[in-house]
Amino acid sequence: MANRMFKGIALMGALFALNGFADECRGVALYSDGSDNGQMLETGRSFPEPPEWKTNWGYLDGMQPPYIRLSGMKNVRGDWKGVLSFPKLPLYISGGNLRLKVRATQNVKFGVWLKGGFGNSHVHYVNLTANTTRTLDVPLSSFGVVGGVSVSNVGVGLFQVPQYQYVTLFIDDVGFSCVKNGLGVSSSSAVGSSSSAASGDGLLGYEFSNVEAWSEVRESRFLPNAESEFSAAYSQHERDSLISRTNGNFLVSELEYLKIENTVHATEMTAKKSRKTWYDNLYSVVRNRLRENVVANPKQLYFEAEAIAAESDYTVIPLLVADLDYGYSACADSLCSTMQIMNAHLLTAGLPTSFVRGSKIRLLLDPYFIATKQRELPSVSVCLSGQCSSLKLKGSLELEFPSAGLQKIVVKLKSGGRNVEQNLFVEVR
Image (cartoon, rainbow, N blue to C red; front, side, top):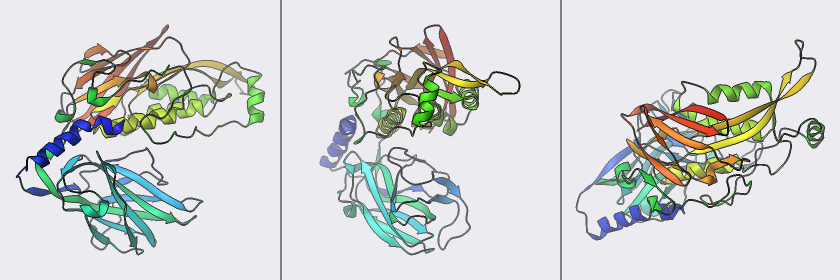
């Protein structure tokens, strides 16, 4: 599916190559001084901690701060991997080398690879000596790809990291030595200009699903493997006790309920925080399940939506929606000596990314990305700069932002007698 989405972009690259495009290639820095920080995709991330994009641990033998820092420790020996997205990607690479500086606090095996219309390249491995900066100049041929390809992401990893060993990886001065002039894959080349789209209309090759949104079954469409469920908060004994007191499927604490309400109704938020709210709220509800196989796995929906956004270079964004009944435990008296179960409802929307590429994007509504048990799906309208439009099921909207920087998207949801107006925030790059 992902490869079909970029069939047109791959064809464009092939045509340029066949026509002998004569422009000289140029070097492009992806990350050099901390101003070009990007994002690590959550899909498949196994680094214990998220990256820090502007770290300053002082001058590190050729690394001038700020630089990227990846750290952590695990209780099992294994590989730590992550895929980085930078603002200047994707780029049409004509040959040459990938250049970067790397440094680790322990002796460790480091690997780097490329991702693009060709899929994942071979991994290029080097052994890092503790507290020694390595400058890598990796020819494109070392990745098993030839010149004339579109590169959308850079993957990095540490391999066979020992258990109970805290390791820090530093990365700096990432770039390509040979990019064809004028052949960056911009958002304007990736997105059409029509105002709506129906199933099968050829929107970057996207095909809307026929899944019933209330079904808990989702076969992985955009990722190679299905994601595991959130770990359950209650033991089987606790579940049995609670089920005797409620017919609900989910029961959270009052504190979690208040947190959910605050995020759904927040008027201001950073783009990074906004990106996580749908995932975090569904995590709070679904991990506190009293019964299994109630609703589609939110982790699966989120990561697959993120994969679509990444493959389209953040120009085609699925809207995540949840419409769920749940309950929360509240104090029944002033001393909180007894508890009562209160009914609540989660009607919320979310985006799988904190940024979008360019002033125009496509927002799409696929039943695949709706987590609900309701047979009647919520109606959705989207407002930008005071202009509101209905977003139909199996349809899309083109959004045009007035400027770069932090922008607010207002999503209005209506389900039965419930109405929610939620503010989502993205950074426009």
